[in-house]
Image 1 (cartoon, rainbow, N blue to C red):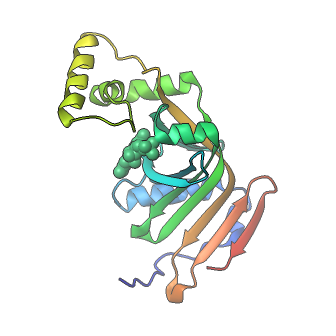
Image 2 (image 1 turned 90 degrees about the vertical axis):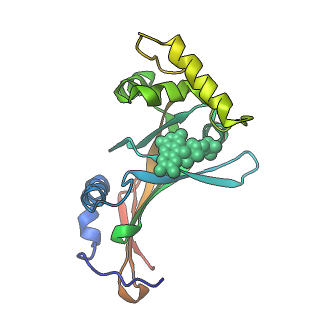
Length: 205
Ligand SMILES: Cc1cc2nc3c(=O)[nH]c(=O)nc-3n(C[C@H](O)[C@H](O)[C@H](O)COP(=O)(O)O)c2cc1C
């Protein structure tokens, strides 16, 4: 279970002189090229009303200077957490290429137009599934979900599927962005970019 990492060039603080985005996009694109499974998957951490953390995987559907975007059900646990405490930490765990990227910052809903544009690009099955599932709420049996899907499939037969009222995107606006790169002897590279001050710091591994 011990892997020695050292395949690619060391990440240096100078690479982040112009900000965090270029390297973040480069690393995402490297993860895609490396054929690792679900390269845009990220682990989203939120806190509930009691201050207890919760984490789960979602898919990154936007990465630009504003931050990271993912889509979900606005009635789900994660969305309720973000309503109460609109702050998140997201981690891309690119284990297969010995890299990790963590972004922490305030989370807000994206505009309805942005959600509508993304929703329209989804396969019809996913659009219908979004209507059929009250995400994170209990359900008696799988058959109930299948019935709900059948019902919405009939309801929208022959029509475009509109965005469900309780569904949309969140944007996490970075306060800090930390790049981690595995190195030999556990002397890994960690470089943190702080957006408010454009500070770049190397951290001990
Ligand atoms: C690879 C992968 C990708 C996922 N992508 C999403 C996603 O983009 N949006 C989403 O709401 N849930 C996604 N899920 C499901 C979530 O991990 C989670 O089960 C669900 O959103 C409910 O979380 P919550 O109860 O904490 O709100 C994904 C799960 C996996 C394993």
